[in-house]
Image (cartoon, rainbow, N blue to C red; front, side):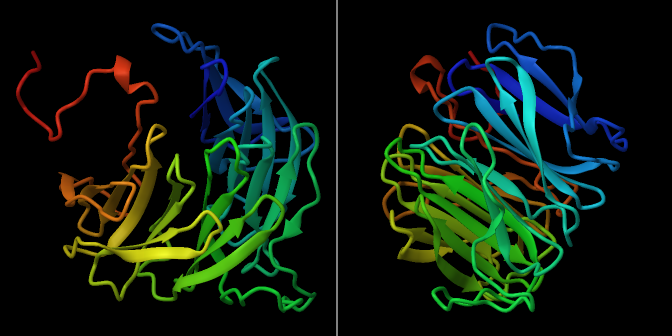
Length: 353
């Protein structure tokens, strides 16, 4: 789900669970008015445009343009083909579909974000060939640019140029991406988890991907989303959080400067079981960031970053989600806290007044 940034209308998408047929994507969408009880449009299949799809969608991601009512959707199908499409909020229609790849090793290595200042869309993904390298393509508001690797390599999948640190020689399994929300910035941070349990980041400065940093080569799991990234909304600093088999079952994190360099590092103490899934959520009104994570014992936990140097004590929210292979949790900040009653700081069985 995403909201149009200017109108407040919401857009939800989901897979219908069946293979795509000619001219369709197998992904259904519906538009909400954003008013009152939120009236929804008739569910409709997203057209595939010039992209030929024959399998069901397995991964769907969306991002909203901060300056317009445009939304980009990216999806990877059962046959690992990936595509992108652009939602035009003015006409309430999809267009500009592009095939990103025809094959890959995994479904979860694709994501999308927007530059906050320019409003250009950034899509990242990997290919079947030379699968350790991330590719990217930019949407400028009217057309797609060329698909380009963030690091140059030759036909033998060997890195060329020598201007960046080597990327681990393992296929990309997961990619998470976040934008600096400040209107003066085009910065984007990406964190990658490979099939070889490596966690690395790369920083987009508005013109190029730089600062490729290997954070660990010993993530406990590669088949679960134990990575996340977010920006402090006012400062422009970013946070990367990840699980590490050598971290005594805690969450490791690093704070990066506005240029993508490491400023602080540490652990969020947990120690009960290995971390399987992580999600960071930025407060749009401050530099606070909420982290939620799940461990292998199916506990869901949370901690609050104060925007300076400290995390709050870890709180257990759920002690059995019945799964430890997905991400069965979500945290959302209120964009208008003054108009919303403040919740209690802990769950309660007592009825509200």
